Length: 461
Image (cartoon, rainbow, N blue to C red; front, side):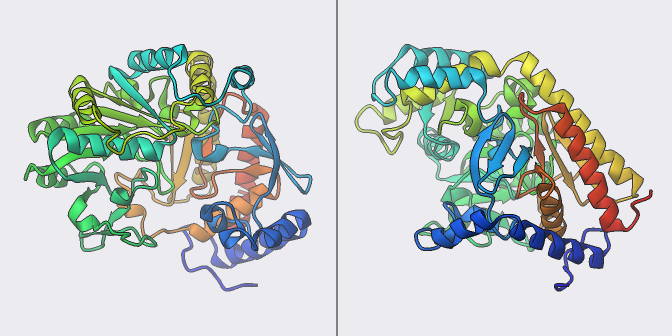
């Protein structure tokens, strides 16, 4: 047996956890010879032998090598089938081949995928976004990272300020400005594992904990922050962290009083409803950003803005591009995907089904936690469900770090994946799509119960 993990969450047996990790890793490797061979081949042309570095950090010792994806299922090169609750970290939220999206994309491929010109679809999409999210003006990007990058730039243009503020341990994509966290002493430092890359986050970025209105007020008081960039509900770190009562109203009041713009990043909170958290909570941001699932699997992002920001953007881009946009942004293929998603997929009926499946998924996890008297918490945002190794719902992400329970998340991921269930490889959370089968939700609950029973040594309870 390998060394016992040092980050065992409360309620689990360290020896059983170490044993499960060893057994499930060996089982995974033995059953995936083609994946292992492809990994070795990839090492000669890919960093870490993976197309993205994240995959090297995921739980399986040999990466899951997907041959095809259909519905809410994955099929690997070694002949294994999986119910997919990871859904590409929200990018495949509507499933891997939603019929409405597939039909639209196939039709558009015969009409051209890149033109750099306008189309009626662009107007339809931006009008629909105005209707759903409230902001009148929108622009297209290739990713949510770019949407956040451009929104922050426009916030600086609009306000004439240079600093930004974010909440600790939030994820807003691959932006140097947001690669910042709070140290144990409360100082802003680069995120662990991230080099400064020419950007000194101590000079560019303020960081406070989510739900900490006193810290937020102190940070905004000098009047030097261009924008607060916020997830309306925090989804990183293995938990669903909700705003406390009155938080968003106070956030909006503080930003307005200090002349600070408010950017709401809806990229991972779209599961909340057809208008995201913006509509569900009645938010009034100056800018909204989103991406991932919005084009049904085609790389795409969007940012919306108020009249004031739009006027500043128009002045800023009157001559040249000002560092905004890219050739592939607003491509007809991506925008046709957006029209299909907004018009035929992001419906009330779709969300009702995703919510119902999410409720069952959450209920199954909660029942296991209660049965074993584990001091853990499970949270849900629509069809997004995550559990954290804390007895109460965390009020901020800072208390989830340094990470506790990473060995348990790896063991649980491997245990379920070896038996045909794939959850998010970073957080262990689950996402429901409109194509998710109810029987797969039931199977997840049974496997989660069996795994926790094995890790506590109380299978019979």
